[in-house]
Image (cartoon, rainbow, N blue to C red; front, side, top):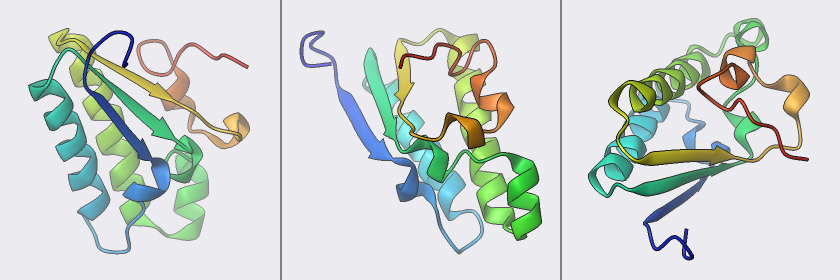
Length: 114
């Protein structure tokens, strides 16, 4: 981002993990809103697996907040592609195997670099 001379929003997936309903989703919404306002910009989410585990695993744990947060991330990323607003989203994980498949479908995190 420094080379591209655009605002860089760096965060960790763990920053979105909350125990109170709606807080994680609100943080996702705020991040994407700030990045859109500063566009062109880059969002980088480290440890994506902290918030992007498969929804089946989340349901087994009974964590509705985690599912709401993941759904907000998916909706926010879909909004970027429909608006074409100059925001690029990158993420890193050591656990690609636990990510929800909806995260790595075309139009979202569809390019994997090892």
